[in-house]
Length: 177
Image 1 (cartoon, rainbow, N blue to C red):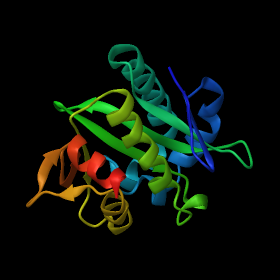
Image 2: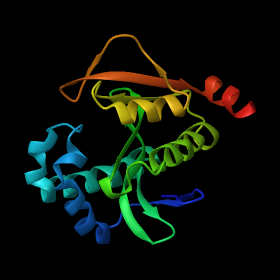
Image 3: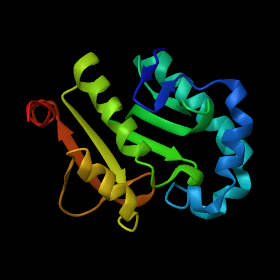
Image 4: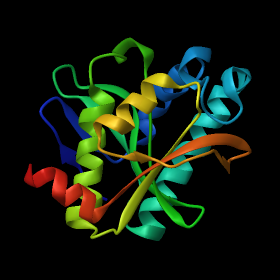
């Protein structure tokens, strides 16, 4: 498992020591409102955090990449997860950040690093993101990342979501400009 640094973030393998902070974060209805299960899932935060932790580690072992823990470099504080994973025949960009850091541009900054890793290091052909249509903030993040919104909605994880995607060619063209 590898780590990636950005100007303000350390994207690193998630560790067992992150679980208390991760559980507390997942207990906030506003943080999980756009995830499968929605705000009602906040009451199962310990189980959800443990399950996600295991799933993310399995991604790295199975596929050679997966979501990272997001650590704010200035404070060395765990702030959520972000990264890539194979899902439904695609490579998905996903993230969940604590509401205390919303609006700071961390999703875009980390997303750029994840796309760079996916296209430059992993040599992926395309990366998708699935976003609930009412999640305006995440739709803005995908647009800032250069991801193109596909028409209509796609059923994923039992939800109707917008699919945004970017190809390696689109990524490289955006880096040249």
